Amino acid sequence: MLDLGKYIIFSLLSIFLSISSFSETRKFNIGKIATKQEVAGWDIDIRPDGLGAPKGSGDALSGEEVYAERCASCHGDFGEGIDRWPELVGGSGTLSSHDPVKTTGSYWPYASTIYDYVYRSMPFGEAQSLTYDETYKIVAYLLNMNDIIDEDFILSNKNIGKIKMPNRNGFLLPDPRPDVKNLNGNPCMKNCNTPTKIIGKARDIDVTPEDEKS
Amino acid sequence: MAKEKKDIISRRSVIKAGVGLGALGLSSKSLLAKEANNKNLPPNVPEWTETLGDGVDVNPYGMPSEFESNVIRRNVEWLTASTESSVNFTPLQDLEGIVTPNGLCFERHHGGTAIINPIDYRLMINGLVDREMIFTLDDLKRFPQVNKFYFLECAANGGMEWKGSQLNGCQYTFGMVHNVQYTGVKLFDLIQETGLKNNAKWVLAEGSDSSGMTRSIPIEKIKDDCIIAWAMNGEALRPEQGYPIRLVVPGWEGNMWVKWLRRIEFGDKPYMTREETSKYTDLLSDGKARMFTWVMDAKSVITSPCPEKPVLQKGIHQIRGLAWSGRGKIKRVDVSLDGGKNWKTAQLHSPVLEKSLTRFTIPFEWNGEEMLLQSRAIDETNYVQPTIKELQNIRGVNSIYHNNSIATWLISKNGKVDNVRLG
Image (cartoon, rainbow over all chains, first blue to last red; front, side):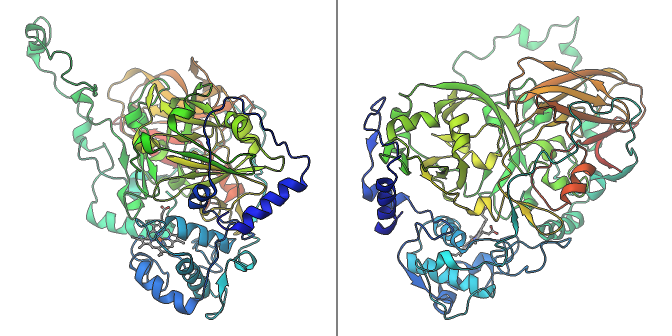
């Protein structure tokens, strides 16, 4: 709710919702009222519909430079990921394979999440140091690298809620668990039919850290 | 834990080439019983009896015995690119009862540990409330308080074991869980100050660390049992556990228990943060992924014997273990010595609390033969902890998260214990 628009929407909402449970009474009288500036400084989240997106814009062409400077040292020039740092680009068509590659392009359902996350958390170790425009530029660059928008598409607070992500419909709700057979608290206790042949040992895979202290 | 498998494999080959020795704690050295010093044994009188010991205040804040120096959190270095975005594991194999000592509670950070002077701490509540407000730590402590034991388990606990047994240790395969008593206020009590709009359906919890951790939580859960906590096991939260304030979301995946909590926003829709889209979604074999899989299903582990705790003598031993469920209390735990063919019900030790670790024990006799140890938890909803095969049949092997299957420890004829997969 950084910009006034979001604030006004909420104010209107609360006026129209006459059922709203506005109460003047505070039970304990603890705490202080937050000012608008205080809230604006911390309320940095953005929802899929674009609610909360701060005013600003940028395209992939200008994003390439900012990305190269602030992101590429870990995530690679093309988002391919250096060493064990996360890859951000590619992986399309791999989600049902043996080796799924989950990136902003192949997996993330909303463009808003990229903006929200990059602004709040990246570059790693320099959180919340990008400007709004820089963030739009970088997100546009990532979307373009993932073939989601053209390089001259101007991404902004007006359209970030309308970008169609490839894996938008890749998520299932609600949680179907418990999803295993319902044994109603009475599992087999005697002579159960279960395989007891050893088909793998962690020792043979040999990736367990050595313990110098033991 | 949520690393792409590709990374893990490539790193694995490096490790293989470079190290190539036996697994954790299982070097032949550690299997030898350490020799006692005869001078300290009867009929002799040991030195610690004949001399004075340290006075009070030698350790103003007491530490464990020097002989317990191997009881520590450990990480798996090759799992992550940096220790600031990483995880370590609770040494469950060395713990008794149900309380996890504060210094042994596993750590999971996405941007390192934030160091916050409590004077500078503020909690902001905004969004669909009547009054957007700010509370200091002292403010929060003026609300009616609650004291509750809860387990916290990372959704990726056991995430490395989906395809097969990978890590040879109780600590590495089950150690992303801990259990402490929290002191705090019910989050919903703060609403009595801020008021709440009727269309508020979701909460965004936000951390003030360098990752700005955020998760969406449905308002029903907030009304039910979420706590804003400042103490664990009787003392202030440890910095790595969110000092001065963390959110407690009982029975639900650890990632939602936002540490260094700075803001609670009420909204009418979920926020779809990175941690509930890119991460903490469970990929099925058809390429679709489950979302908002919050509850931690019932699970149990034998903490001794286990790969770190070999069986050193023939005869009677006590199997010790822990069981827990995000849906309520543990009702029963069964133990098998033959890989799941036959089961016996273990003894549960009080207290048996809801959404808390529960201790179980059962005696067994080892005569030098191979044994396949398993434990199986049943919770008060009558849910039975499944086998890995059952989970794989439904979810495939790429879920990473929510592996609550039964594990198998093989006791070999030499008393060593191994993490094995049956099939």
